[in-house]
Length: 79
Image (cartoon, rainbow, N blue to C red):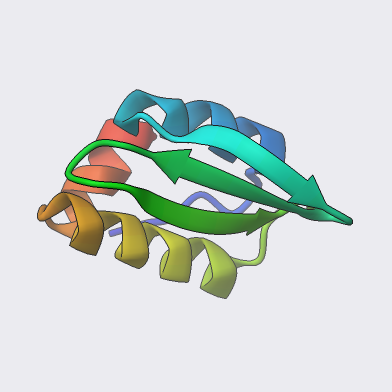
Protein backbone atom coordinates (compact mmCIF):
# COMPACT_ATOMS: atom_id res chain seq x y z
CA UNK A 1 0.00 0.00 0.00
CA UNK A 2 1.88 3.02 -1.28
CA UNK A 3 0.52 6.46 -0.46
CA UNK A 4 1.29 9.37 -2.78
CA UNK A 5 3.95 11.61 -1.28
CA UNK A 6 3.39 14.74 -3.32
CA UNK A 7 -0.38 15.32 -3.14
CA UNK A 8 -1.61 18.72 -2.01
CA UNK A 9 -4.84 19.47 -0.15
CA UNK A 10 -6.74 20.70 -3.22
CA UNK A 11 -5.96 17.54 -5.21
CA UNK A 12 -6.95 15.39 -2.24
CA UNK A 13 -10.24 17.25 -1.70
CA UNK A 14 -11.07 16.86 -5.40
CA UNK A 15 -10.36 13.11 -5.19
CA UNK A 16 -12.52 12.72 -2.07
CA UNK A 17 -15.52 14.08 -3.99
CA UNK A 18 -15.74 10.59 -5.50
CA UNK A 19 -16.99 9.41 -2.09
CA UNK A 20 -19.41 12.31 -1.73
CA UNK A 21 -17.22 14.60 0.41
CA UNK A 22 -17.87 18.30 -0.18
CA UNK A 23 -16.25 21.30 1.52
CA UNK A 24 -18.63 22.58 4.19
CA UNK A 25 -16.51 25.25 5.84
CA UNK A 26 -12.98 26.57 6.27
CA UNK A 27 -11.32 27.94 9.38
CA UNK A 28 -7.84 29.31 8.76
CA UNK A 29 -5.84 26.70 6.90
CA UNK A 30 -8.15 23.78 7.70
CA UNK A 31 -10.98 22.71 5.40
CA UNK A 32 -13.86 20.64 6.75
CA UNK A 33 -15.45 18.15 4.37
CA UNK A 34 -18.84 16.52 4.89
CA UNK A 35 -20.51 13.53 3.25
CA UNK A 36 -24.01 12.11 3.56
CA UNK A 37 -23.02 8.64 2.30
CA UNK A 38 -23.62 5.99 5.01
CA UNK A 39 -24.85 8.76 7.31
CA UNK A 40 -23.27 12.13 7.94
CA UNK A 41 -19.48 12.19 8.40
CA UNK A 42 -16.96 15.02 8.72
CA UNK A 43 -13.22 15.10 8.14
CA UNK A 44 -10.77 17.98 8.36
CA UNK A 45 -8.01 18.45 5.80
CA UNK A 46 -5.19 20.94 6.39
CA UNK A 47 -4.65 23.18 3.36
CA UNK A 48 -0.98 22.26 2.95
CA UNK A 49 1.22 21.48 -0.04
CA UNK A 50 2.14 18.65 0.20
CA UNK A 51 0.09 16.87 2.86
CA UNK A 52 2.20 15.03 5.41
CA UNK A 53 2.12 11.27 4.97
CA UNK A 54 0.85 10.62 8.53
CA UNK A 55 -1.98 13.12 8.10
CA UNK A 56 -2.96 11.58 4.77
CA UNK A 57 -2.86 8.08 6.29
CA UNK A 58 -5.06 9.09 9.24
CA UNK A 59 -7.67 10.74 7.00
CA UNK A 60 -7.79 7.72 4.67
CA UNK A 61 -8.22 5.38 7.66
CA UNK A 62 -11.10 7.50 8.96
CA UNK A 63 -12.80 7.55 5.54
CA UNK A 64 -12.40 3.77 5.15
CA UNK A 65 -13.91 3.10 8.59
CA UNK A 66 -16.88 5.34 7.84
CA UNK A 67 -17.55 3.74 4.45
CA UNK A 68 -17.05 0.21 5.81
CA UNK A 69 -14.37 -0.72 3.29
CA UNK A 70 -10.65 -1.38 3.57
CA UNK A 71 -8.14 1.45 3.44
CA UNK A 72 -6.57 -0.18 0.38
CA UNK A 73 -9.90 0.03 -1.48
CA UNK A 74 -10.10 3.75 -0.68
CA UNK A 75 -6.52 4.30 -1.87
CA UNK A 76 -7.18 2.38 -5.09
CA UNK A 77 -10.37 4.35 -5.68
CA UNK A 78 -8.76 7.75 -5.14
CA UNK A 79 -5.32 7.39 -6.70
